[in-house]
Amino acid sequence: MHDMMVSRTAPDPAPEAQSPASSNPSFSPLYRQIKGLITRGLQHGDWKPGELIPSESDLARRFGVSQGTVRKAVDELAAEGLLLRRQGRGTFVSTHHEERVKFRFLRLVPDVAEDARALPQPMERQFLECKRTRASQDVARMLGIRSGESVTQIRRLLLLAGNPVVYEDIYLPGPAFRALTAERLESYRGPLYALFESEFSTRMVRAEEKLRAVNATEQEARLLRVKEGEALLLVERLSFSYGELPAEYRRGLYDTRHHHYRNELN
Image (cartoon, rainbow, N blue to C red; front, side):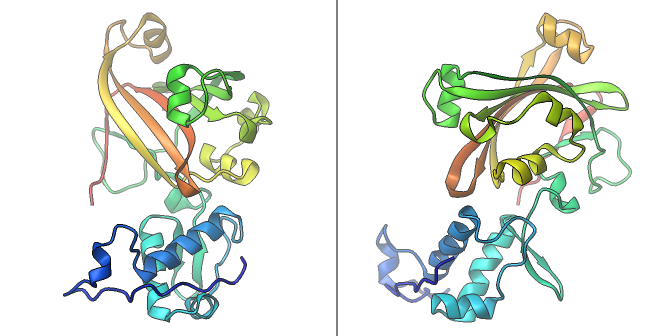
């Protein structure tokens, strides 16, 4: 990253009294400016997933701000899962290869669990299809591309103890995933997001989801081994990479007869 000095348009507002400049919509506290610069460095690949970033004192010198300002920016990035603090070792760029990050987007858990805080069970994957196709109007709108543009579509089942519980259609924007093949998916043993991160330079940093109940069609019922018309949970997920760039649209049908969808609200 090129060394950059931050414009001090206003000091960080004190907790008990904000600066008058904070009423200006264009005002950004100093630590948020630093957070933006660090995020831009992550987006540009200055520090790769899993790599150690410079110390807070080094970053403070680089940006010409106090170490406390840098710490506040790093704290927010760590809380958002973009950075990972390791006691006595420093701060690292989060990666989907990390055990604690691996299940970040997986929400399906058994109805009966000995420890509700335990990591979800690993799921077996069965890839049904991986192909290049044209984006429908709905898919294009979600990914921020034009209708008819090329996308990569992955269709798969997720199984627990040999039983299918999730049927997914995954859509990825064309150019970045042009080289993705069914053979590569079948041979890869890690999390799908880790593959996207390490081989396609796309790291999913956050996601938005919509949930609603639907009834299984004949095809969906056959794949999930449920009765036609059975109630399923439809989960639509839009995942973003750095810079709020839409990087994946996923439509999953969940069989929740023996599992539930868990979310944690902070």
